[in-house]
Image (tube, rainbow, N blue to C red; front, side):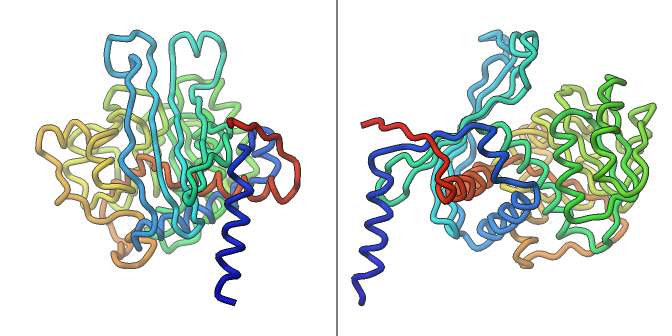
Length: 346
């Protein structure tokens, strides 16, 4: 009887030695909903708190995002992880490009997720990564809000009416009733399309903000823009507001970050070296001791954030573990349906 689990495990591992399943975006969409992604990511954040999720800090290849050479206005991130509760390992290779990619009419994000059998090192799947990235980026905000707000209703402000603005809205609506959503984008046509496409996710009104200040009048404010200027002002943010700077750059002015009552992040080391806190950390003005909690600690309840009139900054930079977890569930569902193409590298 003691040999049976070992035999079952060996059979599972043998299945994955010879071939790698190839999965495109259309296949992913058939087996994955936003509700699924929120639930998967919630469980994975708990794994951060227990230490069963292993997530090294992402490595960035700068292809002109922050430098002049090479001049391609882009970046690629390498994001490996192991997710204990799913016994899943893999890596996402994902980037964002303006420049020539934008001129070709292609989406900003481009990505690929590779899954590995952690027992044998065999590659079990290669799948399109941008769709999962967009979905889990929305989900991580929704989960953070779940552990920071007790009220079932929420007034939301969003800067950026693109794909990630949409997935933020979709994910948050899985947990909260959106009594109002204010959206601001420099492109008026984008906000009009956003309002039409998101109306079924918002129970209240969707207000197209006429100024950037107007969108900050909300319970939670999210920035999902490619902006490189510090446009979000401290005096716009009222007490009791939670601010999510999601972009790769610093979209908040320094005083808003420095005077926040509490700072919450997904991964401390990563959040200090990319995105909103990068410059201030390099200057020694915000360090690890200024971080109140991680989302994993909030999810486990080892740290508690009671509702108050505090202004809170929450920075989920993005972790490969969320992508690997979602991708593993996608792989299992596609295999169960028997609709998969495979390729043998050996």
